[in-house]
Length: 113
Image (cartoon, rainbow, N blue to C red; front, side, top):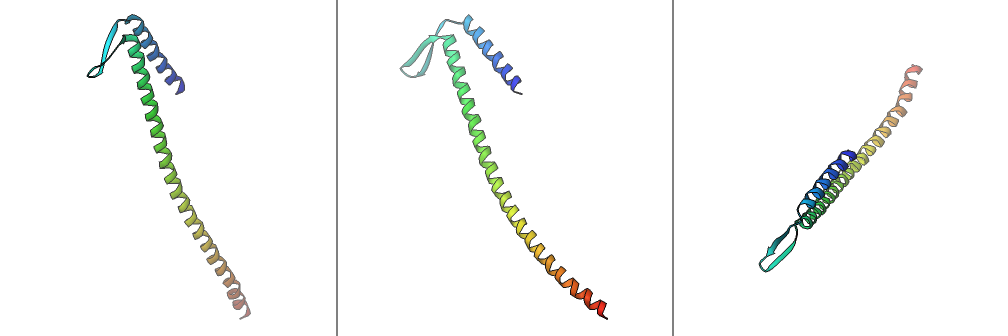
């Protein structure tokens, strides 16, 4: 999977570089009234791709953080369930030992008759 990701990034990057080499004409970007930036198209495209990559990375980190919190909640619920099950096992062991302690007295009474 990493090789496929690398190949996709490489192809997109190569396409961006080849496109940038062909498009060096200056263009204007108007952010808001009175603020205009003029730069070659290739630089603006590279900056836009970089900003997009940063946004994708931040989104990926956010999704991973959410996943970690979800797993933590699930782990706490499972730990609680394990604790309850361990208590049940201890109760069942105690009940079984009590029943086994009663069994020999019943069997010895029947052999005396």
